[in-house]
Length: 143
Image: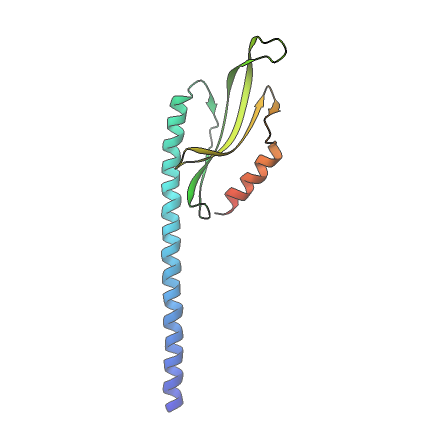
């Protein structure tokens, strides 16, 4: 009988501990879902502001937002196309090119984390498309 009481107490204690852990996990999951939902709302607001500011550019129809728990911030994977005025390096004359930009923005700081840019289909800058895609995979896989 004594062993039965001890066994019951031990099993009961284990179940209480496991149950408490489950409650904490559920609360964490609910909090993460809430952060993801808020991220989408905040991302849409930021995107709308950008579209007003950069009205001459055409933004991609399907933006992607993700709350990144490691960085503890909301990320926006965006893309736009539009004309850009440049100064030709050889002739020093003004010219227009078609710009294509892919970027990942920290929605809460409004800072670009990484950007890939093309002018008339040719990469400009140091970031290659492969580097951009690799960083995108790293940042958006941690969901």
